[in-house]
Amino acid sequence: MRCKVLTLTAKDKICFLDTPDCRPDACEFARGHFDRVKPALNEIFARDAFDRQAVEEVSRAHRVCPFEFSLFLSLWSDVIIGDFNYAFDPRVYLRRFFDPPQDDYAFLVDEAHNLPDRAREMFSADLRKSEFSNLRKAVKAAYPSVMKTLARITPHFSRVAREINQVDTADPSAAAEPGRQYSDLCRYRVAAEVPEALVQVLRRFLKVAEACLVETEPSDTRTSLLEIYFRVTAFVRVAETFDKNFVCYRELEGTEVRIRLFCLDPSDLLSDALKRARSGIFFSATLLPMSYFFEILGGRAGGKVVDRVLRLSSPFVPERLGLMVLPYIRTEFRVRERSFEAISEIICATISSRKGNYLVYFPSYRYLASVREIFASRHPEFRTLEQLPGMSEDARDEFLRAFSADNVETLVGFVVMGGIFGEGIDLRGERLVGSLVIGVGLPQICLERDLIRDFFERKSGTGFEFAYRYPGMNRVLQAAGRVIRTEKDRGVVLLVDERFIRQGYRTLFPKEWSHFETVSSEDALKRALSAFWKGFP
Image (cartoon, rainbow, N blue to C red; front, side, top):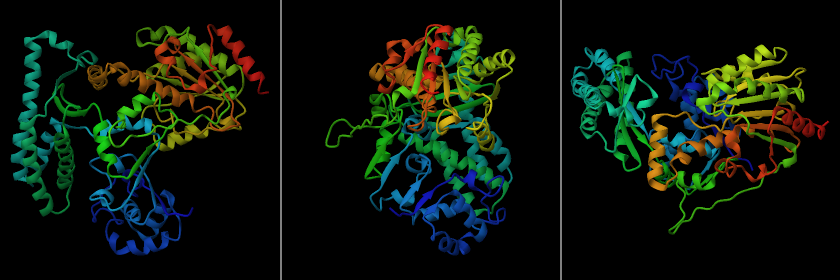
C-alpha cells in the first residue's frame, strides 16, 4: 500500500530555536510562514513519508515553522503517527479533524499499557499560588485590569494555607490523612468537590486576560500572561468535567500552595474521547491482566456495543529464554539495604556465565547507585554504565550505542524500571543477552497512588492491585521483554524478589513464562545459567 504518512513531533523537540518562541519578531521561521508554506508543501508531497527528518529538511529550505508545517501536512495525510495527546488530551487533541467529526477515523493505540497514567495526567490540572503572585508583579504596569482579578485569586490560596495550619494545630491526629506520612514539609487535604468559589474568579480572570491578549503586541509580559491563561483554561475545563471519578487535593509545602484536580479513574473520559473515531484498537505486549486494562481503558462489556479482546501467542520459542526466579532475596523498601551485597554477587554470577551485554533494572535511582557502588568496587574488571536522572536524548542514544554486538568485553547497564530504558528500546541479538529485574516494580508510594488505591478499593475491592501491583508488574514485563526481540535471539532474565513466587504475582506471568525455574541459592543460579548457555554454544 502507498499512502502519505505523517509523524508529528512535539514543538519543543522540532523547533529550530533553542527555546521555542512563536512570535514573528523572534523567529524567522514564524515570520512570513504562510507566505512560504505552499512551495514547501509542493516539495515534500513528492515523498510518501513525512517523518521528522523530511519535515525538518523542507522546513529549513523554505524557512517555515516545522511544527506548524507538520500540522498543515496532517490535512493531506492518510496516516498520522503521534503522541497519545493528539487523540485524547482535551487541551491539544487535533480539533481540525474531530470538531465536528468530518470523516471516519480509526485510533490505533500502540503501547496501550502506558495510557492509563498518561490519561490521568491529561484529564487532571493544577495551579500554584506562586504563579499568580509572580504574575501580579509582572502585569502591574502593563495590565492593571488583570492585576485586579489576580487580587481576587490569591486569597483563595492563602485561605487554604490557613485552614491546613489551623487544622494541624487543633487536631494533631490529622497527620494520619493520606499523604501526610510522605514528607514532613508537605501537608495535604483531600476533598470530593470542586472549589467553586475559586473557579468563579478564575473564569473572570480568563475574560479579562483574553481581552488584554487580543489587544496588545507581543512582549515578555504578554508571554507570561499567556502561559498562565492556558493553565487556568485547563483548570477550569477539568473543573467542568469533575465528577465521582475525581478528587481535589490541596497541598501546602513551605509557603507554596498547590490546588490539584486529580483524575482517579480515566475510563469514562477515554470512552468519550473514543467517540471521535469510528473504532479504536489498543495493543501492547503487556496488557496483563486484561481485565484491568479492559476496565481502566473504558472497555464496554454490555449494551448494544461490546468491545472485543484478542490474545495472540508469542512467536518466540520459550526455550530460548532462560527465565529464573530468585526468591531468596527480599527487596522491599524496609529491608532493601540488606540486599545490596547479595544482588552485586548475583550480577557477577550472571555476567560471568557468558560474555555479553546486560541490563540490571532497579526500582529507584538510589537503589541502583547503592548496588553499583558495591559492584564496581568488588568487580572492577567489568565495564558498567549508569542511567542518570533527566538524561537528554543525546545521552540516551550514547548509552544505547555502547550496547554493541561487537563489544569484546562484558558491559553491564544499571537502569531503572519504567524509565527510558525500560521499554521502547530494541537491542537485538548480541546487543543484549540478559536482564536482571530487581523487585516487583511497584510505583513509589505517594499521595496520588494512595488516592487511586482508596478509590478502587471502595469501587471494586481492587485498590492495591490497580494502584500498585498491576502497574508494577507491567514494568517487570516490559523490562524482561527487552531480551528476546527476534526469533533468533536467546538470553536470560532473572526475576529477583521473594514476591515473584507468591500467587498474586505468579498469576500475572504471561503463559509464555510457564517454564520459569526457581533458583534458591547463588550456587544453584550458577548451575542453572551454565545449563542454559550449554544449549547455545
